Amino acid sequence: MEKKIFEEKPSEGRRNFLQAGGMALLGLAMPEAMSAKPRAAESLAMSGGPKTVHFPADKLEALTRWPRYGQAEKDALHRLIDTDMFYEELPLFEKEWQAFTGIPYLRAHINGSSAITSMFFAIDLEPGSEIMVPSYDFPTDVLAMRFFSYVPIFIDISPTTGTFDLEDARRKFTSRTRAVFPMHSWGMPSDMDHIRDFAKEKDLIVLEDAAHAHGASMQGKKMGTWGDLAIFSFQASKVLPTVEGGMGMYHSRLHYERATAFGEYLAADKYPESSPIHKYHGTGFGQKYRMHPFSAAVGRMQLRTFEATAALVEKNVRRQNDPLIQLPGLSEPFIRPDIKRAYYHANMLLLDSAKAGFSRDALVKALKAEGVPVSVWDYPEQHKLTIYSEAKWWHHPIVIPTSMPGNDYINGQHIFLPLYYGEADDIIDQSTKAFQKIWAHKSELA
Ligand SMILES: Cc1ncc(COP(=O)(O)O)c(C=O)c1O
Image 1: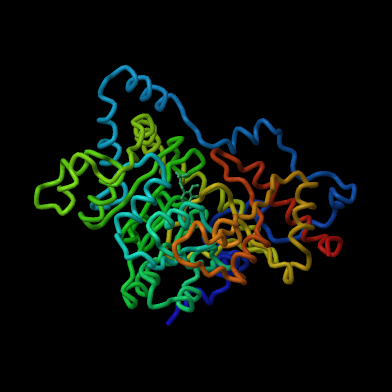
Image 2: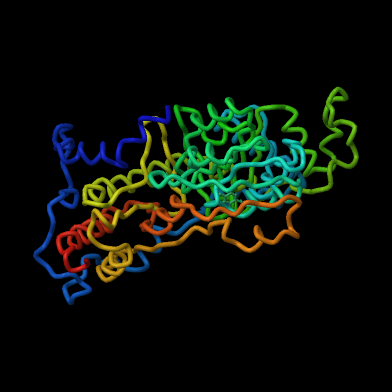
């Protein structure tokens, strides 16, 4: 029953379309760099040939710099600092984020981590309850479980998408499992429809980490609204950055009230007397997690330009990736036809070394010599870190998996190209030529 759609090879449909002259069929001119023809004439730069990419470092910095704050953000902060009505900014940002996502209840948080901790409080599970979470994830998603005596079950990621591997979750399900907590790595939505079906079958709560996926959607429904509860981070590197900030997203009024009263000592005072949380008026539950009003002001301004920026980034990614994924062994994480993904941090590509005939290290060395701004960064695998293996931090033992082939593949075979936040055809096309030149000389890399 597991998604026929994923049996297709990553990017194969797009590759076939391009190879079949799809651009010409649509009457579109194909940029020279998009031709799949190898460019063998010149030697590789690492073998003494000329570099392919000639792009000044300051121009590259200007195109890739993130976050970007302009006059609108500065004006909003100046206006705010001159008033004594700071806190009014919070409901305004919440209203706008609610209109953008369509969630029934939400709360602006000091950061994504505080939204996660509040979410764990809100679900009110028995001590010893297991929550399935990717090991390829941010520490708070796992560590905050400690405070509520929950037990993380480390789940692998899919080597084709880099997100929650539902098959691994099925294998690791036990009678103590109570929730799943997928994360949309680098803006690629996890298969929330299939995850929800699994959760329904097993009576699990669906939590969702949308910290990388602002504006992404599946079947037209925004990420951050698929989980029963979800979180966003607006930290400075994120797709919508407010320097620090987060959002808790809730479908039920009770989850909203519990999560909010956990982080605001006066929240319960505002709930109706009929609310089971109202009796905690005057105290709440001990934390102070309200978003800083300056972050809310910046968030409101960022939201105004958000969709135009995301569209520009995506246009640049397509111009870069469409020719590159025609090269044997090079693909991008598979994009289901019913999703709109976001792009966070970098443009990830995956190298199948067996098909390409050379290693990721050899490719990176050759690309750097050609002047391509390429990098790699292994996402920390939580299950390998010390804190999960020391019993004193946990109320219940944690099973540390011995094998995570999806993590290994994504960490071992990815390369990152930059996301460009301006018109970047020059550097994109020069980079494409560098890849094509390397593939034409692939025997030298083997
Ligand atoms: C996937 C993921 N979840 C949660 C967080 C936590 O967000 P914050 O840094 O706003 O606390 C981050 C932060 O980088 C993250 O990448």
